[in-house]
Length: 176
Image 1 (tube, rainbow, N blue to C red):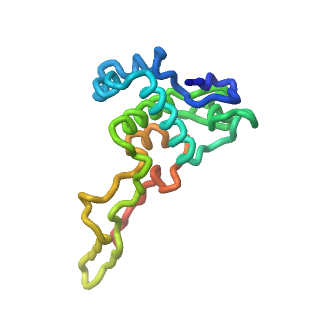
Image 2: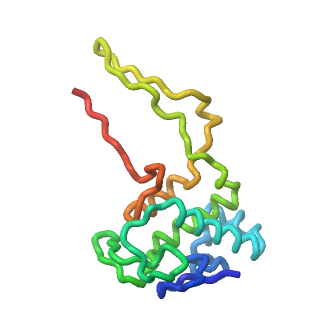
């Protein structure tokens, strides 16, 4: 059964979006995943929405603090800012709802919860005799698993927190 967090700190909420509600219906309209979503029955939609909620709440280290001690989900939160505006303690941001829908689409497409989040990565980086040498980690990049949380979802949530894999960070490289 779906119990939607409405911003009041619902003690038994299990999602931020009702998959049968107006927000989900409007979000899916004209979306790339509209056919995939339509193919799911009501219980399938509920399952991926609940799993998407659990996944995001488990993998994102949210900024701020929970609004109420006994609320079931990570949101609503105190001390949050979005696009320069302070959010009220009862706000469930539109970007969080959009990220939840995108995460649900990703989970409906395939089970991402078994993905390791590893990438090929850089094993060695050195500058010798005027040439930059980069050695990549072992493995075939085509067979490496992708992150559990898709990059677009991370972008939607970037101002609200960070993943344990550092999914919201970027580093600059400078040449001297």
